Structure formats: C-alpha cells, structure tokens
Length: 207
Image (cartoon, rainbow, N blue to C red; front, side):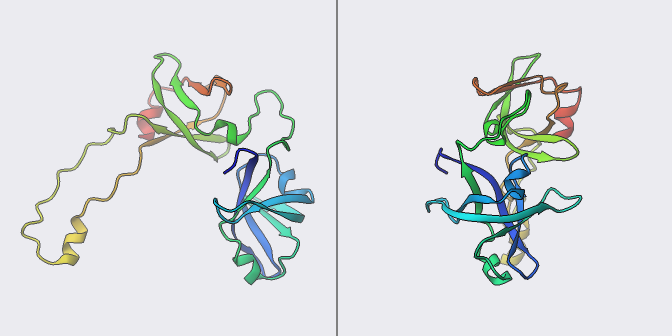
C-alpha cells in the first residue's frame, strides 16, 4: 500500500440484505466508522484506492466489529463484491493522540528487545484486542519446537495414505505480548523499537 494511505479496516462480509458491510477494524478510533464522510476503498493492492461516501456506521455490541453503510451499495449482492476490500483514509487525516496512544500502523514491524538482556527477540506483526491490546511478535529464532523425525514412506504405496505423512509447512513461531506499561515500558516509534519486560514464563508459555 502506498505510504500516503492509512488502512483503518477490512470488509469481512455483508450485513443483512440492504447493502450494509461488516468491518474488522485496524484502528482504535471508532469515529472512522461512525462519522459520515469520504473514505477510500482499495479493491486490490495493485489498484489505486477509490473514494467512497460513508453514510453511517455503528459497533456491533460486544464485538470488535463495525457495520457501515456506503453510498451506492444497495443490496447484499453488491455488498458481497466488496468482501476482502480495505477501507483507507489519507495519512494526513490522523486523529490527535493522547500520551501513550499509538497508531496501529506505527507499531507494525517495530523490533522487540528484552529490556534486561538486550536481546532482539523479534518484530511486531499484528495487534489484537483481548480485554486489552495484545501484540503478536514473530520471533527471530524459529527453532522453538522439537522437530519430529520424518516417517519412512518407502513401504506406503497408496498416494492417499502418503498424503497423511507429508510434513506440513511450519508457521513462523510467534508470541503474544500484552501491550501494557508494566510489560512494554518503552515504545520508541522514531527508533523503530519496543522494549519488553515479560513476566517469568510468558515467552515460554506462548511458544
């Protein structure tokens, strides 16, 4: 995505039959979905975003999801064509932050260091809400789990049976870090780094 845009959410599905859309937010500012005005729709990463008019929106009670109405989207079929599209705003359109508030996009890819040892543990790949914000950190060292020995396939003739024993591609090892002051005491946006002070066992439990 071009640096002049900020992603604020992803359209995950239609809502009802009248063209409303469910949005999975990637911003902590509900006014992005509740206040009418121009937003930008990106259908594909290789296509220039197009302006759309947000008419109305609200948060689904008890869920970190929003429902919005976009001008010109009148029924469920039209809404379905927007599944997976990104909703953007111009990067210059940033709400004023309070102390110790951060834009999600500024936290992604920050390097994560252990405050006591100085070790570079990994980098931030995502942020979740689970009662409080939680950082997903992809570890630089990926050999956390013991590798299982490869099975001998020489005596297994049926192709369908062999598929059972084919090794599955391993996902990158990640840990989840509660984004609270006690555990993440240093956030240096300019220096592109976080410092963490994890409780004993937190990294091992996640791994």
